[in-house]
Amino acid sequence: MNPIQDDVDNLVAQWAKEKPQLDTLPMAILGRMMRLFKHIEADISACHKKFGLTMGEFDVLATIRRSGKPYSLTPSDLLSSMMLTSGAMTNRIDKLESKGLIVRTHCTQDRRSVKVALSVEGLAVIDTVIEAHVAIQLKLTQGLSAEDKVLLNSLFKQWLRQFES
Image (cartoon, rainbow, N blue to C red):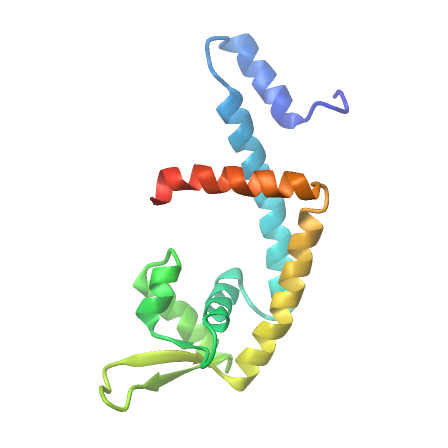
């Protein structure tokens, strides 16, 4: 394989030979993104695992933490900021509660209303894990220049609007 060529270039070349009428540029872009995602997910997942967390559990803790003091959200607030079903959210909350990282509290005015808050241990854990998480993200993007990072971020933002606006 040519050092400038990668596996995606090779598969696109095969399709160009077999089906020259196909526009395979989107295939190349998405193929590389999917391969990148596998590497990214593996490294980030390994980081979280060192702290006894899954990526989903990290997401819940991080969402509550970045909401600011008093580090407490309703389950519906959590759901609106994450792409999950209510069943999946309940499962994550149950697991984090069993680990002692969050606590459920009932509103004094309306006992049906529940808040999910970081425990003291949960706050300490997420404050530690977020540092390691960001360090991994920096490592994963170190092959890009500062300008490339800004450009790539802008392009992804523009592309994402197609699905989320």
